[in-house]
Image 1: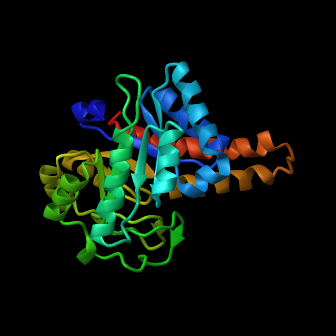
Image 2: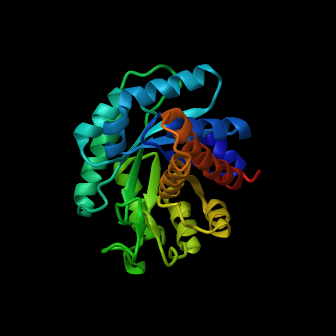
Length: 279
């Protein structure tokens, strides 16, 4: 995070469900020589295996690649502790749908647990809190998810209080972003709100729901204080379309038709990383 702050750029966070996704993300980052974060939600890590992802990331680091793993959207203390014990680099506590008091309590519990770990010098498990609901589905949507509106965006003072009471390392606010991609176009980001939250919160901001956001808005958000940007739906769509194209050839070897999906995901990763790192 210090690196991103110093350079005034954003780290790309890309969700994966399998080794093909990992291959696409890591190869894209390697070609551009920039750090990258691998994200695995509860469902994704149940499918691929959390320990397997941690092992893949460890191997990538042994080859001098700056790859990190994040336990994305974790809804319970039990799952968060399991992720920390598995040696992830960061974990997101998603209690955005709970009351503010419940959100603070659960988030602080995991912050305290992460801080209590006996870790090698220089290593720390970062804990991210989420304040403000932006939906839950990483898929194509017809309309805004229920419960998402301009009125429910995160307030600066609310954010400052949340950070102060939980002692989190990172904050994911609701600032016009939404999980998934809306077919008619995603709402615009509230750049002034991002800037105001960053000024009072005192921690780096994370932009969830990056799929479908315009390039210019990404740049403005980074300038306003966003230091990590999540991309998931775009990758899923690219993967599916690539595999469908690979299957049209009649090929039955998985490593051949899946390669089309990897190639399409890699295009997304490279384009986003170039933008986020201003290359």
